[in-house]
Picture: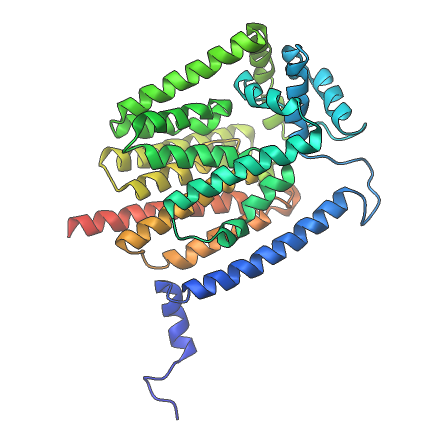
Length: 407
């Protein structure tokens, strides 16, 4: 007969899930390898499908990167304002690939053309792989500054990595800038500000950054971010002409017809705004809920930064809060949650993990795998759920640290 001291799976499993003792380094390596193999197979299947090798396609497919490359080619040819002319931009996209591809929107400010123009000088596939490889490598290096001992295998297994490669998006660049800014903010504020300021290429991602820097009294980083953004704006205006900025503002004014009228799949958004629209709520309700969520997240971020919580906790709240607070942020930008996970692991290693934290971090790590292949009809809000879980785990770690300090 078994004794009380012997292993009882019914008693031990809940305890292991609560304290995370099941997630030892060897298991993490094994599970990461299995997940990585699965993702490679899924990606190979998706690539074959988008090239018509599984079933015939009704129309040719492309990636979001074609939008960047087409914009770069127009800028290189001295017609940068046409980047924001949908017909001209679509013609350039088809010239890069083939006729009949779906149109890929371009609502980035001319600052991003500083990168796109470089890419536009390269052949399409060379530019694609160069951009993704360089930005992915920078992201890996940044995460390894946060967690020096983490294996590249574990990093590569994070599902948002495959979505970013598969869509040809710029999430690696955004995540790298967030990681670099948070790593440097305490010791090298000017460098941190430069990283944060460079996010003006995708300005909505910077929604919480001024809140964090101002609340924490990081005025050198704040000033550096502002000067960096101003320098990039000035450079783009001088290089591409101020009429390009005028064209951008005109195009941005009509962006609501895309994001408000659900011209894109709302199921891919990580925000409450997208969740409300997927579940049939009105645009007014979605905006109201989003505003309330953004204010709540901003208040939490400001509180943590004002009271000088540890850098891992502050950084985790900022990076995990952004996918919740920003209304239009798509599933591939859950790369930011990858940065948040790294900071939360760093915080846990330094000061201990709250109950269930390791298990839920593992769940958060896996969730983005299902975030990009759903549509609004499924009603499965994977991306918003992942974003909400990431921020909840950051709050739990902040509370854990607060209780430790109060003892």
